[in-house]
Image 1 (spheres, rainbow, N blue to C red):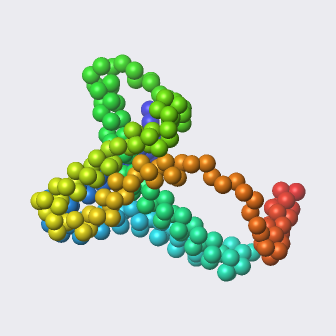
Image 2 (cartoon, helix red, strand yellow):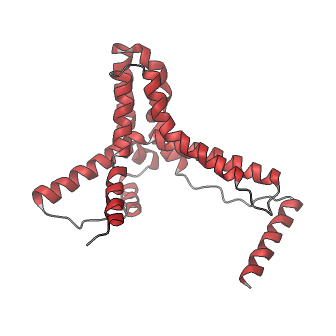
Image 3 (cartoon, rainbow, N blue to C red):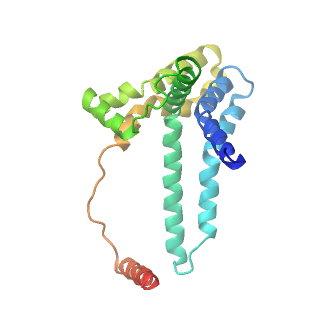
Length: 220
């Protein structure tokens, strides 16, 4: 038997699998069917961007006692910029994530309710990505092959909006451009990072050494 909390966690996981498809459909419906395209676009964007804003505010007010205010503010702003960039990338990958989740939901329902086969099939995502990259060659080409759904939806939605509802083109333009560029963004961000040495000032070295001494002292 599962507790109510465990049942709620399962239900919440199922709900999360529908977030990306629901957000994608709400974007498209707001541009193509619903009144006030600006309102619907802003509402869905707020769903994505309010959490990092609240997280940045929480980080700023929770300043560690030993951290200087200026360094804490700089670190908080850097983390906020990183969170915004990550959220924008997630928004760019929304069509791919929605199609991936919808496909997984469909396969699960068919296997559980119809075929009753392959119910334990599972492959780690990193193993799948390595096999796909090895099979498809170029990383950029592989990114386009796996994420073509984003540019396809962006092109189709842009053409429809331009012809049938041009007033929705302005609020939709930025999101459509992100979807159009999603394979290139994924390829660019997936490149190996620069592992060069980090140059620290004397004050930064003293601060880090002090943190290291306090950390060692705690465990000692």
